[in-house]
Image (cartoon, one colour):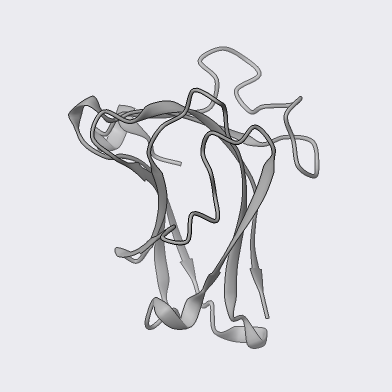
Length: 140
């Protein structure tokens, strides 16, 4: 994941000290991804570069789980190949300190036969906080 250290946004992926992945606040498996954000300079984003065809095996949705914090502000969004999908329905409350799952209908994104980038971002002027991301998955 490329964060503010590389993409010059107000985001930091991972803890600053080892272990860099979160190992206590986890939805499944043994670790989750901490994402700190500060929108004092604009929206915060974490970018992941990949090369995948998301049309195989009947894939229809992208799902991710998010754990928030009561002090968090802002609104979550995802970009797939630069196409932004906002959490308009407030499926994810960034101030909710529990695991919440957001499923994104990929038919709203356009062509996903050649996915080269996935971005997780938080928008909102002056928004700041920290959250955890886990279980980023594709589903039929």
